[in-house]
Image (cartoon, rainbow, N blue to C red; front, side, top):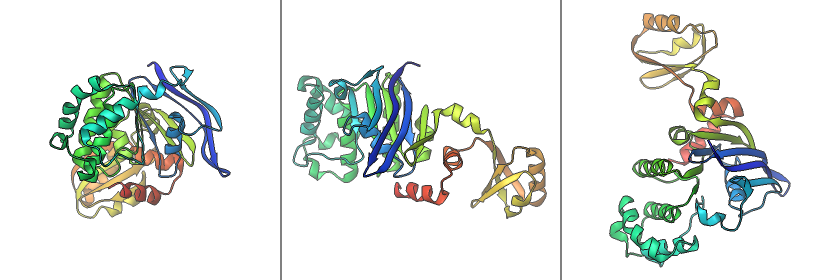
Length: 311
């Protein structure tokens, strides 16, 4: 795939503390690329350097092989983690204003407004002021401001934070439509599940350093199919002591088993079935969550707290 955006060894420090440390990555044109990691990993700092809000101490940000020129921001739809709208404006005024900032004039913008507002279930509020909207509605409006000028590159910082499941699915659908249109999409998140469902490529970072990157399918292939999910009736805790089991995680009606490289899956299932009723089993790819825990050597409880913050 043709490359759209490249970061070359970018580094940023604040008061002697390294926020981003020698980070390099390449974002293919027309792909959905996720920068993922726990809170404080350096994701937002990286995005701000891409947007030239802050300058890297060293390294380069290249767009289509060249340093970004002054027109670059007009080609980008950027949704920052800390969002803001003009509360006294109507929704229509806000959309016209933000599009104009990107060089997209009113005659181009006005015909698009009703379609976007309808898509986001905001059409009835078109002539109402922003301050009359709920927080969730304001988030959806800000998403439209990011998209309405038809950007070539969409950059979304912690996009899903605070959104309910229905609106998450709505926005995911829109992003997939944009991908089909050829738009390049870069987003950051600490919610591994969302990245796993959406991304073509990922870069895992922790404490400012890249720990893993590449095509999602290739990343997963590196770690093999080393897990087994077994739906059972009864107590499956005994399975932890079976040969070939590296780790057992219990849930209400099933167990997940992480296998050792030499595990005999058929023998494991046979011995479980001798003790409890097996309703279903599935050999699973490792989740992105599990991969990140392994390669970043991070405390799982720390990441779980981060994900809980997003619910």
